[in-house]
Amino acid sequence: MGIADSYPSHPVIPPGLLEKIEHLCVEWRWRLKGFTHRLRQVHGDFHPWNILFRSACDFSVLDRSRGEYGDPADDVTSLTLNYLFFSLQRGGTFEGGLKTLHDRFWKRYLDQTGDRELLQVAPPFLAFRGLVMASPLWYPSLSDAIRRKLVNFIFAVLEADCFDPSQAGEYSEKAIQ
Image (cartoon, rainbow, N blue to C red; front, side, top):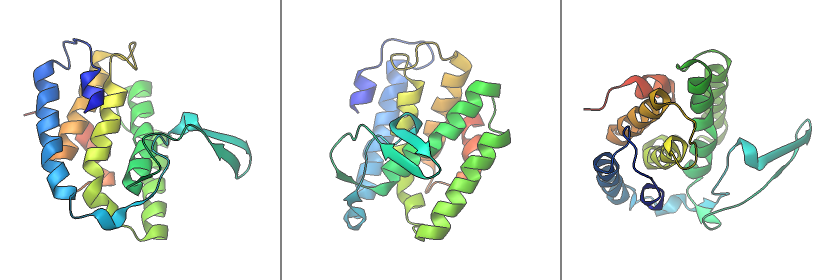
């Protein structure tokens, strides 16, 4: 919860809201305790700005973070949440080409890996990346409306039993209870 500790005071994301997110994440910690079999070599900070393409499929990945082992859900969610993030910034909703790419990525990933268990463990990883994206420190010029949608998304995924990629847009629109 170091990312929550770094949050400055902000009207959309006050300390009490961060505390509620932390409580939900502690519940997830106990839910994930039995998933040690998922431990794999991961990147740990896998997002578009850490992937450098030269041509076609020739690329390099930069800036590995947070240790070299973890759950693949960390890398998959870190990358895929950007589709929602960029779409929200572009038009305030999750639609169009970015939604198509998101849906296509998830379908191909799940079809090719067969790792449907990832959907059961994804919520706290999505919450972490969502907190990074909603942070006034990391994204100071982000509008309050987009910050609110990211917080909606965080709460919706943490309150779900498992992540449903086809509901990503709906999660961002679901008002916090």
